[in-house]
Length: 68
Length: 141
Picture 1 (cartoon, chains in turn green, purple):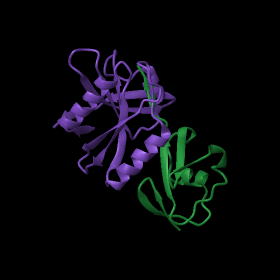
Picture 2 (tube, rainbow over the protein chains, first blue to last red):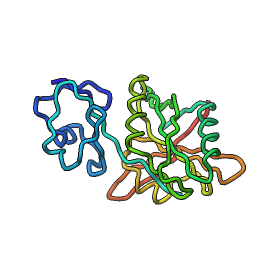
Picture 3 (cartoon, each protein chain N blue to C red):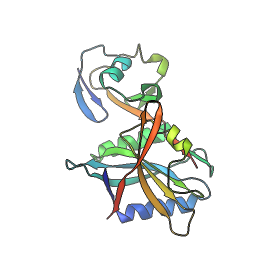
Picture 4 (cartoon, one colour):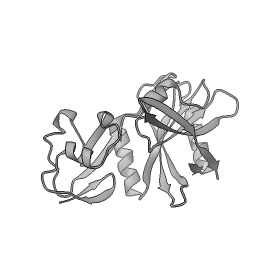
């Protein structure tokens, strides 16, 4: 299946979960990453079970903040 | 890394940061990475500091995602973020370092503590559980 990951078209096997995608994409500090699929945030507790499908658009986001 | 930013974008950040002072201002930066290693900031986005304080900033993930989508539609790449230090120097604080989880990002910090605003760019990465900071070469065009 074809999905878009962080703006790039990628080919992956059917049934790929968000957890596996994080692993395959070598996402840095995965414990801090937030994932959106088609502009909806995926709950972290669902990463292992959330299966991606053809045409999905995935973004990896990091919380952005800081202090003085 | 050599980073370029337009003078008009710097002025846009300064104007926004001054308008929300004493709160910290924040936003995203987008552009492209050239083959010669130069990072070109093509556009600066102004986002809401949902903390609304002079001591901290947080970007709303929903607003962040909305702007990321806008960046993609424009054919640009998200390059990192920027924020202001209304009362402190242009360098990453301990909290800035703690929350810098993306080593591919460029972190711009705009200090308003002196009469003349100061903008610097930083690369922050984690090695052996320690955050290391490198000041980048920032050229205003």
